[in-house]
Image (cartoon, rainbow, N blue to C red; front, side, top):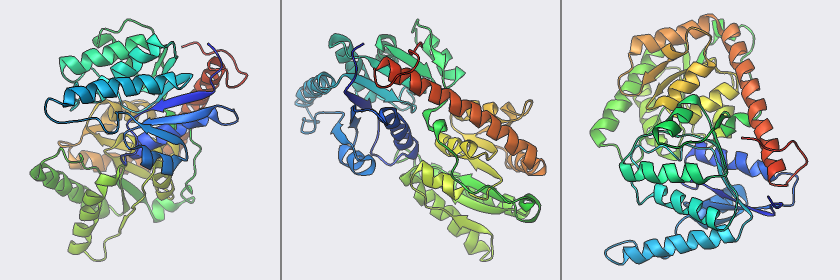
Length: 397
């Protein structure tokens, strides 16, 4: 593999998803201390260029027709545009995220772009590295076929959990993959740890909420928001302060509504609203928190990387896997619940269990996070060596 002097980072970025942006930032750090130049291939390149300070281009051909019969020519233009993009770089990296999760995806969406990204990388002999990606076997036949071809053709594939490794088998991809934790777990803690004894005098629990982002019916959103309000009230009733946080800009609507309803009922309620807009800002907002209950995956990632024990109220296996990985032995699977059907009393009881043994719980989370941080950084070194970016042991997936 020739030394890489220009590296493309492909992903669904620029849309306000904190986890995707943090994953891109983690990928870009591969080039720190090198003379290689990054190129972000993004959904909204202007946003990415402004936020990350890198050159960026759109995943699709910017002015391609999208409607009616002429949309076929738009697809042809998209394929040619990806070919030109891949030709312009020495290597292509997909840095983490759940980009290979098929729920709600359409064959002509990101799955189509991934297929042609892999096809052009293969044809033009540009190495394609998929690093700590999330994978499932959901979606239509077309989506799964496009995903399978991309995963099979990539030069390097690592996945972020065992569930993703099993999904490759379900997709029919016959290759050996290594599990390397989520790229965002490479970050160093930034939040102020709770002061000694504060769990007895001033316990604080973060609640991470979400909005599906335009795909959720108003009635479903209202039901979910009502459950969030009930959760916050139940936590307040056991004597904790609650800090409501988000994981995507779209979530602010639900977060604001949740906090407002609680305060409207009880103006003295000990509930705060954080409007943090990045994983790093969420991590800072977790300062002083003793536990987190969250729906979005990267809210949970931010928490555990700060040593904050978690209970997941998620919507897929990735939240369950992370919660199990970071919980003390014997409690892992119990701390993962479905977003729309979790039992309120059970979740509150698990938070109380964390608070009752906070010192041991937090120490366990910090130890697991340290191991995961080291694993991601070791992968970084192997990738740099493979791309000729820095002297390190050669990457062996």
